Length: 308
Image 1 (cartoon, rainbow, N blue to C red):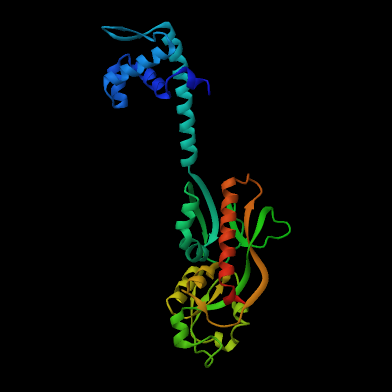
Image 2 (cartoon, one colour):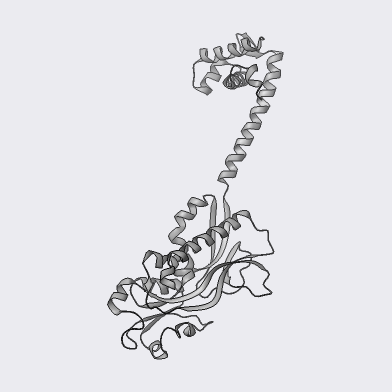
């Protein structure tokens, strides 16, 4: 290609030549480039002078390619078509949308993922997300979604699994509620309103057990079947809720939720990101896995002083 620069006066001269040959007129070529007809004529004349041969026969009916001109036009036209195809492929690759389906809890999506969606779209501008949302405990098969969050897999689980966050539970409430009512372990029994997650398939009393007495659990409470609503009620100052760090880490970091006690429940288990083995792992899925994990690790580091 370096030799081409010595054979022609400029790359633009080939563009002008191709347009004039295709249109059969200097005037039509000039309109394509938004220049004057004499400018196109001079460009062609300079190319012919540089090559030392005529590329067109000029006549009353316009421009007619000479044999040498036909040879050059075929080569130039083929080359430009290949360049055009390559550029179109590059643009398509950069703008192609990738659809990624995630199986997550409503609480995680509402209180952890949505607050950072602007950053996600910045980092993944060509990704369209689709959600399989679970309002209760993360359980059950996740089918053919690209990525799911579940508790640590069993030994016979036929899936890829990557550790995401520890199962660490602490009581949380709004800062305003804490100022008005004090911490969970302070004051008389039943002084607080407990915001309960009512899941018929799992008893959450054992999570509350290390935090409050059985007597306190019998006092004022509000129960919801969707954990996202439980946390929203806590943010609105309606009471104290159980906060899974994997969901409330962002809210704790922002101060929209605060610890309601110094007590913690560390189960020793961990939430995992999982993908089915029955389908190929897409590069974009792995990139999203890494992004989610990095964001969670940053959150946990940011709130470590609140959770230890």
